[in-house]
Figure 1 (cartoon, rainbow, N blue to C red):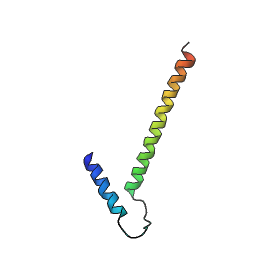
Figure 2: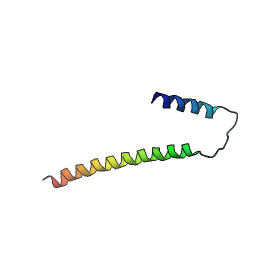
Figure 3: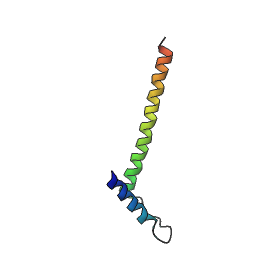
Figure 4: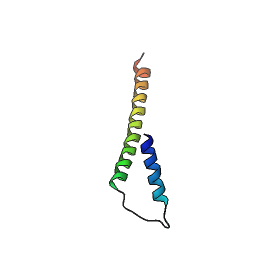
Length: 63
């Protein structure tokens, strides 16, 4: 985990070095990272939805 953080930090520094704005194509790694981030948000949404549904089932059908 610490190695991944060090690599991310080193990569971030390298990307910010330079003189101007360079428009570059997103790499496969960038696309995978973006997909995993969106998947994480989707999993959080599903978890909150499940908690809400359990709450509704307890309140509406519990009596």
